Image (tube, rainbow, N blue to C red; front, side, top):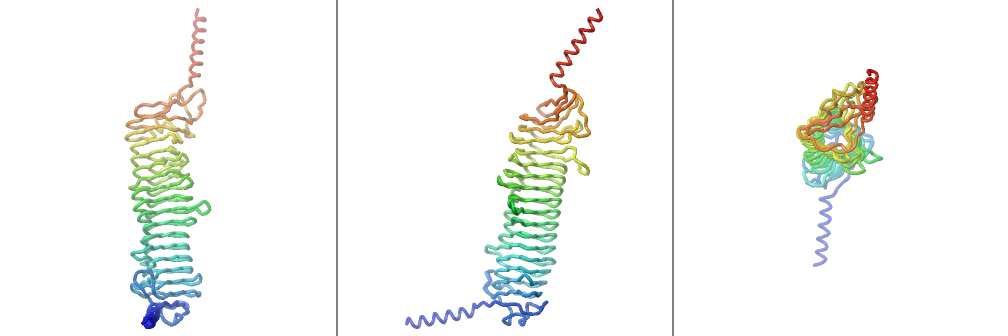
Length: 456
């Protein structure tokens, strides 16, 4: 009985191996040949599909020679185990569906149509996606699409249920690029001139000191249903388009972060709470609209420079450096703000640049302003200070607190800036220094005495 059971088990193993045997097919056909031609593969045949759940199970295919292979067939719902495209090879797809457990592109890919589904895929080399082309992952499982080479997307869609990682150079000019979690990794560059990109729960741009992450947005939308997080060592250049985080935008999350953000146009923070905190963040706005519900910068080494453009929000809290240029160089126009509540903490510095008496009510907050920290003033180079000139710098329905420190220009002719606080305004007035008043009074008294003596 035991011998019979052993024999039946051995037969079962042999049959199982026969049924589920996997073959590796190597392309040996001519340049420009078709995937569907059995004579183009060794052994002769076409890589067959296997299991239906995205884990592969079928044959494997490899293209290693310096040839171009055309795919335009439909493999239905079955999956080949893997596809490998070597560094000297080219894969072209214009139609059909290719399902694979894993894909590794090291060569060149041109996809103008059809669909590629892969549980795990790495796109090195150079790949172009256009037309109705689509790259996706199965509906279930921990699926990753990694783009470590040069990828050009001019249309179509790229999507993953789990993760998309940009590790190389990716250009998006139209179409859709999205996943649950979206990463621009250290040393990578994402250039977006159109279309939409981002993650369902997190969009993270994260570089290092030796490999900064770079993101350039001139049109389109970069978004997240959760947070848009920009940290590490990153360079962001936005001249258009929109960056949206439904639950927030966080720029410079950690103490070691160094983010350079140049904002020249577009919209940042629409419908979000925008945080800049802890890291050494340098944010320069020369255009566009910063439009979150609330802006908070809590670290002393965060710098927001507003040269032009507009800011619209409910709450602005400054614990770092906020620089407002009232008279920017041409062709920039003076920035504008629409803010309900303003708070400057003890670590904050408010720097108002290019001032003249015409800068009246420079900053206006419709509900309240709470002052602390340091005030820094620079004057317009074309302005000559005169006694009695009055600068109304901050106005609010309710103004409380005072600046703890002042860094004000030194004036000539015995004049200086006198801070004046009222319940609704903060202003600076040019007045004589106290010592100058004493000297003037003494001079007038002496002149009066001499005049009386002369008259008598």
